[in-house]
Image (cartoon, rainbow, N blue to C red; front, side):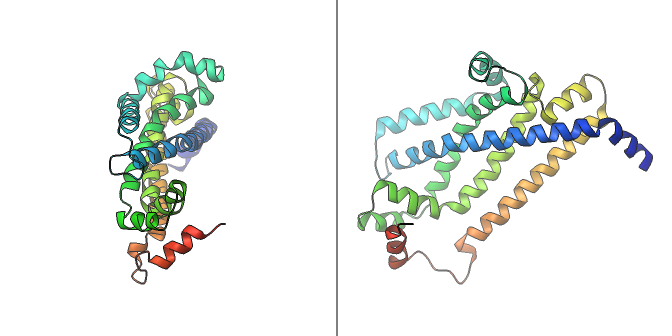
Length: 245
């Protein structure tokens, strides 16, 4: 058994390490860029909705329609359809570099809805109290909505990361690199099923680690789980709104 594992690692170890690194790079960069786009979109959706702090029916419906269209497109189809744009943008449609643009474009609408859902959970009374103190829209977003929604945003982040990880495996079907490409190239095309199952195990372990870390981080931020904590009071809210740092 030990000899078999040693022989397997000697033959495929470098391939697995390279594929794992490529997957991590794709997930990290795509997640960061997707949130850079998705968070402002989610914030725009929450503040312009009919019950929002700056309701704007036309803007909300148009933006919501765009986000819904982005979420409804299957990633495999989007990946192929965006190849000309990807080549124009980054110079190639394959490899890690070629996978990032479609990953971001596909994940950003998903992130936007996740952010909107998280911000919807913020207590309306806290928002109204901040408004009564004369808080601006930027202050309401930066010092009320986002801080109050942190636990939910973190849990949503775990879902987003896992979703993007699944997308990278699909991107491997068209030569994007990473563990998905290894599973297709070796497991399917060359019949090395053992290598394919190892990639599956690595992906499962990665998902479990992400979920565990984000769950613990969310619990550490959730005031509702702290029996000694109290709801945000007037003076605490006033201090947050007037804090300049």
